[in-house]
Amino acid sequence: PAGASMSPGGLGAPPSACAAAATPASRPELSRFHHANIHEKRWEARVACALPVMLLALIVALVALGVMFFTGLLLALCAVLNISMWLFVTSTACFGIMGSSRIQHVADACDEAYEKLSAEDLSEVKHVIIIPAYKENEHMLKETLECIAQARGAERFHVVLAMELREEGGADKAQRVVREFNARFACIHPTFHPPNQTVKYLDGSQGAEVAGKASNVGWAVIKVAEQYQREGVDFSETILTIADADCLFHPGYFAHLTLDYLEMRASPGEQHKWTMWQPPQLPYRNYYKSPVPSRVWGYISSMYEFGGVSSILHGGHHMVFSAYSVHFSLALEARLWDGDVIAEDHHAYLKCFFFSARQSAQDVLASSDAAIVARGCRPALRVRPVMLPVKSTSVVSDESYWQTWADRWNQAVRHTQGVAELSYSFLAAWDMFRVLPLRVYNLYFVMQVLKVLAKPIFMHILPVGQGVALGVLTGYWVLHSRSVPLCPDKIWLASSDSDTLLCGLAGAWALTWPVLIPCFLVACANFCFLRSTFLAPRDSAKTRRREPGLWHSADAGVEPTWGSESLTMLSLILFDCAVLMGPIMLPYGLIAEVIGCVNVLFKGNHIKYRTATKGGTSSTYGTFDKAP
Image 1 (cartoon, rainbow, N blue to C red):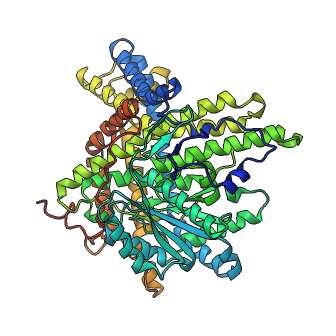
Image 2: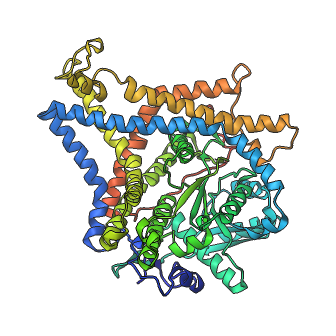
Image 3: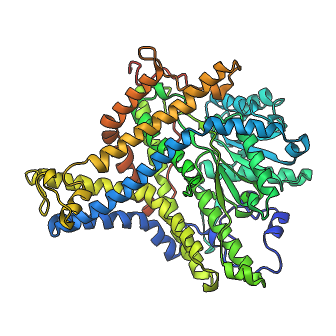
C-alpha cells in the first residue's frame, strides 16, 4: 500500500491529477515515510508508542537515584528542567504580550490592502471551510456560520459541514442549517462520515479507524475533491480552512489569507503552495461564566497558542492548532488527516513537514543542477502567523456546574492524547533517516528536524518532568528540616561557587524564579489577550460608530467591578494563577498527561473519543452562579 489510508471510498489515493503532479516520472521515488503510523505491527512502531512512558520513567528513575544516593544528581536534574521550562514559558508569554499589541494594526493594514485589490484578483483565490459538527450545539454552529458570513468575500466561500452518519438527528440538523445559510455563501453542504472504516498501514497491516475530528475532516476533504473533479473545478488556487464549531473568525481573516497568498504567489518560488496559516486562538467567549478548571486551562492554552504564533514573527517555531488553513492541493497530496489520530491539528503539521522533507529530498536526488544538490534537503513547509485571533469557548456543561469539571477532565485526557504525536514524529524521523542518503543532509535540515522533534517533548514531557522533580525536591527539603544537603540554609548565604549556584537553579531555597515569575508572566499575558482581543475591539467599534459584528461583540461577558471590566479580569486572573493554577493542574495537567502516555503505550490512539460540551455563551452555570 502507498500509505495510511481508509478503506475504499475513504482516504485512499489522492485524485489522479494531483498524484501525477506530485510524482513526476523523472523524480526518484523515496519511501513514503510521512505515512508512518504508530499502530503498525513492526517493532519500531511499538518502541515509538513506548517512548513517552520511557522518557517519563527515565526522569522518575533519575529523581529516585538522586533522593536515595546522589543529591547532586537531583539538584542537577531539577536545575536543567527548571531552566528549560522557565525559558519556554517566559519566552512564550513575552512573545504573546508583544503579539497582542499588533491586532488592530494588522486588521487596519488588511482593510487598506484589500480595498486596492481588483475583483479579478479576489476571484482567483477560492476558500473552502470545513467545520466538523458532530453533536455540536446547533445555535453555536449557526453563530459560527453567521460570523463567517460577515467576513469579507463570504459570497465566494465554499462551506462544508462535516457530519457523522452515526449522529442521531444529524441529517436534519444539517438540513436546517444549510437552508438558513444557503444564500450567504457560494456553496454550503454537509458530508456524512460513515462509521467502521479501516486504516491501511505501510507495513501491510490494517486497523480500525478512530472516531473523531481527524477521520471526519479527512473524509470531508476527499468528498470536496471528488465534487470538484466531477464539476471540473480547478482547485490549484484554493485555500482550505479547518474550523471548530465554536470558532469566531475575525472578519478580516480570510481577506488576510487572500492577500498573503497572492503576495507569496507573486514572489519567486512556490512558497504559497507550501504554507499553513495559523491565527492565535483564545477560548474566552464565555470566560466570565467558565468554572475554574476551564479558566485555568484557558490561561495555559492561550499563552502557549498566542505566544507560539507570535514567536513565529521573531524566528520561533510553532505547530498549527484547532483552527488553521492550508493549501488545498498540499492537503490532498500529503493526505494530512489519518483516520486513527486524535490530535489531528498537530498530526497534520508534522505529517506535512515530513512530506515536504521527502519532496525536497527527491528534488535534490533528481536534479543535475549543482546549486540545488549543494543546498541539500530543505523542507519548504512554513507556518505563517495571522495576528487576527479566533475566539472560541471553554468547556461549560449545560447540565450542571460540577458536570463541567467532569467534561473538562474528559477534554484534558483527550488533549494529552496529543503525546501520541511525539511517538509519530520519532517514528517518521526514524524511517526518514533510514532512507535518505547522506548527500541530502545539511545543518539547516538537521536543525529543522530537531525543532520538530523537540516541540512535542516541550509540550508533553517537560512540564510533567519538572513538576515531578521540583515536587520531590520540595518534599525532600521539608522532610530534612527545611534543608538540602550540599546547599546553604539561607538564601543570603549564597555565593557564586558552583554548588551554591546549582542549588539556586534547582529551586532549593525558594520557588520564586522557577514558579512565581512564570505564573506572573502567564497572568500578564492573559490579561493582555483579553484586553486586546475582547474588550478593545468592542470599544473600538463603538468609537468608530460601526455596527459590531459577532467577532467584535464577543467580549467574554465580563462584568465590571467599580465600573471597570479590566479590574475584574485582572483580579480574577491574578487569583487564579496565584492560588488555583497549581491545585487544578495537578489532576488536569500532570495526572492527565501520565494517563495519556500510558494510553499511547497500550492503546495507541484507540481510546474512546469523548466530546466536551461547549454550550455557547449563555450557560446558566458558571463560577459566579449558584451550583445546583
